[in-house]
Image 1 (tube, rainbow over the protein chains, first blue to last red):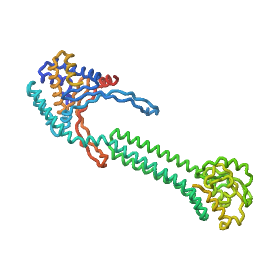
Image 2 (cartoon, each protein chain N blue to C red; image 1 turned 60 degrees about the horizontal axis):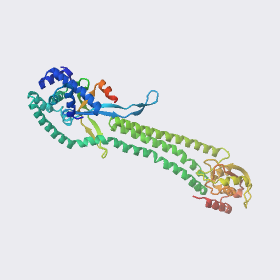
Image 3 (cartoon, rainbow over the protein chains, first blue to last red; image 1 turned 120 degrees about the vertical axis):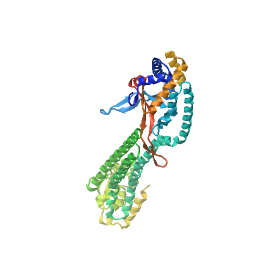
Image 4 (cartoon, rainbow over the protein chains, first blue to last red; image 1 turned 90 degrees about the vertical axis):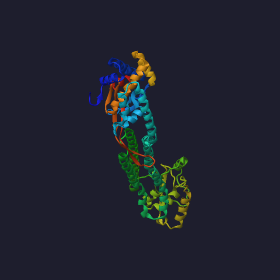
Length: 384
Length: 92
């Protein structure tokens, strides 16, 4: 007798003695049983054996995978696998093994009895088993539920985590953009030193992003140890990680993109190169063409022209004023000189040429009545 | 397929009476159960192995309360098919 295995021969022998048949007979029976079992599986996909359990063919659907070495996508073909579900009573018996060998007693008794009594004994044992099962059913649900619902927890957790990553970021970007026009207005009233304020909100953005991106990372590792090392969960964790990584990459890309722009703007502010415009440029195509033809605006005051600039992405009147006059609050003069082709001073199309008039010392005085008038007019044209 | 049908098939293949086959089958199952209870694996020639395996205890988290629970270890009856049978049934 092998230590931990009941071999085929042993089974056959035991069956022969117990059932009172010859070993040969027992052998034919067992062989036929196995052969028929396989046939039956092929035919019906499931075979139930009373007193043992159910053999079942489980179809595994074809699925896609990636060749690890080449990174190539491959399809793993579907196949059948053999599943065995023990009968409830047998399961119960097996589960009770450790406390004592008590579960085996009914059958142990039957060994000593004659064949005729055996079935009756079995009925008794089965009745006991059924009672056990019923008792078990009362307890089982908790365990079963927790297992099945586990994946759901993650499902709940995951979207939230993602949402956290995305939400705070977008509104902030928008805020930053919306703020820009307002800042401009504020500056028109307040004096120079505020200039850095324009740049301040932008450089901050990267910082915000970095903080955001780190948070989800920290959360992830914490979750992992909590969860159980079940395979399904690993898949889930992997998916979550992939999502997070993609988000991180998007954030980084956005950050670099923005950074380039910021440096561009800074360059424009520093270097005296022709360019400027307002962020949210709304279309006014006709205006551009008109400008080319209009030689000089029909103004009361004649301005001596310094030069002409073209609005570029991210530029605005206040910045041009800052560049040429050294004071962004003087932008109403720019508007005055260009109002023949600019409708709303806060919305100018990219590429619109801006005439920059020369200002006399008198005009630079911001408390003059003329400036106040121009300022009021310019502000009156801003539409929201 | 139910046990009765299987018994019918086996009886047809061996020439034994259905009653006899049924008896043999139930005795066979009894023997197998006893041996499983004794901690032995059962080798079924051409089919596979039936054996009792311990499933380790593990921690689950209740989704509603976030509470963690330890599911105690327990024994399970598992069937490991023989490679030939596995392959035979893989493609149908």
